[in-house]
Length: 62
Image (cartoon, rainbow, N blue to C red; front, side, top):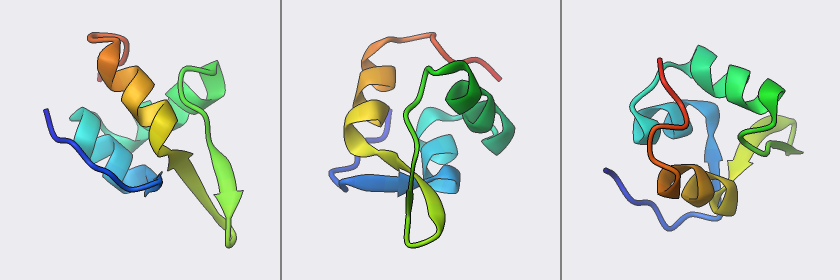
């Protein structure tokens, strides 16, 4: 497991940290498993949302 201390993460970073594809991250956003917000025109994942998913092992699968 990789740990980051940033306040927000890109879709690509989130996929890398979780060990899944970017399409799985987008699906998790659509299903409400991950929270996403727009910052500076980009879709980003708050660190708190990523930590929550990391603590729930096995929630996301490729």
